[in-house]
Image (cartoon, rainbow, N blue to C red; front, side, top):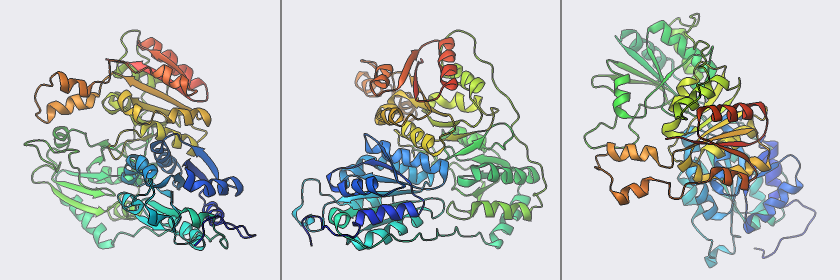
Length: 526
């Protein structure tokens, strides 16, 4: 037990931890530290190879780590201050868990001997972390930090990507330790049994109107191609989850229709399907319960068969199924090149915004989509654009868009990032704009400024809550006063412009696509 840092020629526990993380390939740390993490801050400063990126709110930190993992396939670290700091970041860790993103959280704690006094910032960090982490450990001493760090990285890489949380009491960070730990091999994804592949092939052949629902890595170009071959060979309809971790889409790539958000529309899309084969995801369910409406979005009489869950070797399962069906030589249907025209002068709507994005978006762009109801047109009107990636709000917890764009830009610095953001959801993590400015990230943020929580107005009606009165309306509107997004962005160092016509949006978007660096367009829409 110690009450002050031990001075010796040995490295501190914090130094061995950071050196271990770098040796395991974790070289980026999104941070928002406090007093209990100062020795970890000092270690990042001292140990070569770790890049720190500061976020002014923990939801930015965790959301950015999610975006980085989606684009690189490897974890970033987060550095968070005790239980309250972790709690501030949980919303986007929820989204990251739903996405299957690899993240290593480093959460400081009070020194082991100080914990008995129940200091003001004390909390049950393990209980908080357990709600979204697949692996949680607290270091008992400095010597354990490095080996636990190596284990945390390996566990985060368990398929499909998981969240590890390592709790670091302050004295384990400042006490002397021995040396960094060597990397551990990432656990292999379980292979799908041959019998399951044969059963899936038989079911597809025996169905009169089969459909396949895919998710996870099946949404990358390789997986989509194999799924497209199976679809073409069997005549099965090809669907994907409503919201996906990352879709590699655009002209020349196989397109999977997304299951619609609203339950009635989902059931309409699956009408007549007598077999739904699940690959790398789970059966579709309604986001919420509604009076008198089903929770499971599968047509009556439709058989649901599961080839594999998302933690399995999804690409291996698809490959095996294609082999079993003699589909490997089939040429799948792909999305043709099809760009919309730039809209004419006139009213600015979500539709005209979608037309402009579809007309001008460059090849290789990354779209981070939290536009909610306003981004549907952009999604549909960019299907035939040059190849690009689309990142969704996977867990439904708003406040991910701008942080996700930060992480995506850091993970793919040579690609243009476009963030589609609702004005209400954007206010949850507006601090991400400051990080974009500080790191000079090539992100263009489009704010759909309709001054309301539009999706909640829709849901109010769908839940049978009646006509909203004055007080209910006040809880669903974010006008009076209107948010000043140009002023907010400029106050955090991001160039910004407000537009309210189709032609002014086109000019602003074209200018943003022609330049590098962070920019924001406040698009005032009805």
